Image 1 (cartoon, rainbow, N blue to C red):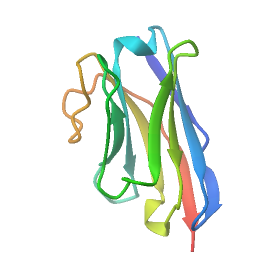
Image 2: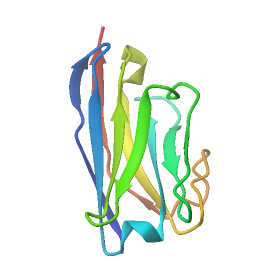
Image 3: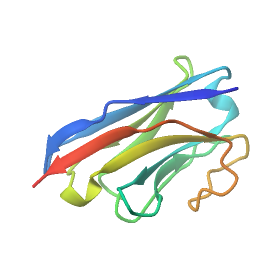
Length: 124
């Protein structure tokens, strides 16, 4: 029943920044571990970042460390992904994910809800 709606994608030049948003409806964001994945056409789904349910710890894919930040505003029931120093290889559809467990599995196993995605295109 929970719905996730992503926004904030678009076209950005290499080295630029974007802030993605994921608005959740039906339940409060504090009830879920939340995360972001991405997938380029023809490629496998790839983990980007996540924030845990209980204590709000964050973790990131190696390619994202140092240039991305995941956060959430429980009052607005929204999760954000701030991405800086974007590279052409970051081009993909970015998907929001929610899990009733403590944490998001980077492999995507057990994820309970998925958004429909927002496209990020990084030009060289």
